[in-house]
Amino acid sequence: MFKKLFKSQDEPPKPRRRTEARKPAGNRTQKTRKQHQKIDVADLRVGMFVVELDKPWEESGFMFQGLELKSASDIQAVQNECSFVWVDYDEFSLKKHTPAKSEPGAKRAGAGSADTGVSVEDEFAAAKEVHSLASEAVTTLFEEIRLGAEVDGGKIKQAVNGCVDSILRNPDASVWLTRIQAKHEATAQHSLNVAALSIVMAKAAGMTQREMEDVGVCGMLHDVGKTSISTEVLSKTGPLTPEEQVEMQKHTRYGRDILVSTKSVMSGAADVAHSHHEREDGQGYPRKLPSESIPIFAKIVSIAEAYDTMTTKQTYREAISPSEALQELYSLRGKQFDEDMVIKFIDAVGIFPPGSIVEMLNGEIGIVLANTADKLRPRVILILDAAKEPVMQQVVDLSQMDVDSEGNAYQIKTTLSDGSYGIDVADFQRAGLRMG
Image (cartoon, rainbow, N blue to C red):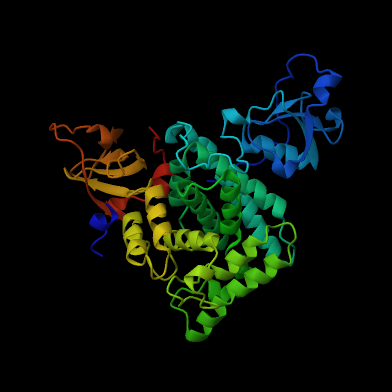
């Protein structure tokens, strides 16, 4: 299918300092207390029930003794108050929110296991909150590193864990968010997008939840070395001179050095920071590694990084459409990128990735909402009629052969870049795009 298709060329929410929670059900005995587990707040997940803090409840900002973590904001509220807490596994309901963490020998997350069935409409709000908190965390991290602070591995892990949980529920919501937030090139936002796309790809490749979390950390930190590059070079509006190009390429070594000295971050993150610009044909930098010497996580991150860069407006060029970016990745398989991983990525985000602007055969314009089992027939939100005039938003499912006013089944004619017919995906969503 891929050969046929590609043969031609808002303000982030503030953490809640005082979170209301339901009272624990029933009396808790000493026997039940033995089933509590003490964990670091960096390891908290949506669905857990906190039964004890590392300080008296009355000294905290919580109204009741007992707190169910229903959102990323709840988690951050606990992190703002405590260093560690106790979780009651009698009340542990993580399974309601995401598949249980994989153990050695367990079924792999993307290998034949069914998705949770959460629709993109239902997941979008939660995914947006997770991405907003993660964006705030990574932006703060990069600013601190520029000032000489050490990488806080706990904060990065927590931000990535929230992204993984959301992607396990519905990956299309996160792919949507990499599109609507891709307004201007910024190292921190780019890093968050790359992390999310890497996790989506890892899920499609059948990796375990732990591996998805690890590749997310690598994606989040792959460009950390750019904090050591001068602002003049990073923000230059035109092509770099040969000397500036050499300086920019040093970010891979800078990133390795920063992460090697950080004990709280997995060692593989340093390898990915060092190797994500290596190529399958051995012509990459900084070491011209052959394919077999490039870490698999670096291969994944390099594809996600290239896709996000191509679909984001840069200071020196316009963005291209997601489908054009996929076609470019496909043309470079086996040369710049690992061929199998390129196929996995296209399969993961879809031929028409969520957030893509598309024109139908009848001339109507829409934005792809979500993939379906048929990669060529996604669900689309129609926003302009054939005369390119605004219409009441309507969701059509191309896989169900939904028809237009003439009785003809909707089909996608072509994809368009942001700005076509005055449409900016990010602005349009913020102005009231209905997710269903």
